[in-house]
Length: 306
Length: 236
Image (tube, rainbow over all chains, first blue to last red; front, side):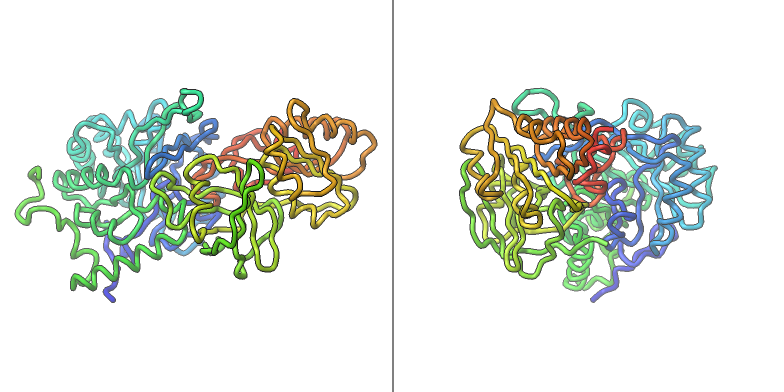
């Protein structure tokens, strides 16, 4: 069976599979087989999150409105990160905020911890009223934020982007110009669920973010065009529930593959997807996942629109 | 840290008034304790029910794990339609049995988790409240001598008559409004009270943060902190 070992931004990982931010609490359930653990987004101040209901099931997926519930930067650094560091997998810390200064503070302090191998800038959370997604939908703000944060740490800085934009290429290019070492896409799509009985919004936060198999084609489109526009290493995710989904994301241009909502229904999904991907690589005579990266792109160009 | 997901064969699906009894072959699966819960998903799952359903067992025998379901939509319907069910669990914290007399209070589908508790607390008084006579049929599964009320009478009415002078523990499961009323009555009489609560969950093991409930005055994950809580924590 071919090895699944993968290089990403200077890291050697045993498989290309990571979790999506906010879809796994490794301190409660263990790491469930991911090769690097991506934390839930940490903000400067603690956040209780949005009032319930916070989730609604939808066809082939779900809409969530969690609202960046997290213990805040101080408690994350004091309580969570030391325990995460003992889990034996590299840590990718996801960081959010309401101003570039908030992001920069968190990046500097978290990036200094030896267990943290990369920082993900969440500029795409749909469940808070300002900050975050309003940065990630504006190319100038995205570039400025990445530039600012890039200066604060020596570890790779990744920008997590929203698909809820008109031109993903413009945002991806802005992140690249700001000095991003890699991209993570996609965050959830903006969605809303209506209560059939009351005909009112079902979620306590009003709207929310759609995830699950329903979003996979949107995610593949975003990965494909972000890769074509930038050539940056990409963590691709959105509806991944098995090895064949992972192959599609690699072909679209991803180097790592994130699993999120599928973890909720099947905590064994990462191990199964890894086995399926290894079997597929063997069938194709590939020596590793990197052989599939960008297979969907024309061989001559990584910069023109396909 | 997390139990293995198991595929358990469906032994029987039986109507029980307005509810449905799903009896699975236990096949050596860990049943946990009453009040813990399992994430149940039909295999194969229908396209319109992507997520598992958090449900506590009605009872566990050596060879059977049983669930009383309120079949409301495609997810619960699919659980009763196939030959096997994916079962992840037991998860969360169940009831902590205290010495002394016990009062079991169930409202609606909340009665579903009481048969197992009755087996462990055979001397317990049982009070059950339901919307209709069809829903009340399941009372027979809980206890032959249960006090059963049907709306407009509420289960808190017989409870209020029993609590003065009661020195023991109240164990309750039902809708939030009922649990709030039961907790208030128990507090008024200085009686210990444990509540088995319910919330929508995508995962059941702390990952999704979907099951937020006010616990200790803050939004916290019910799957991690509960689903059974000391009443004072839930109404703080």
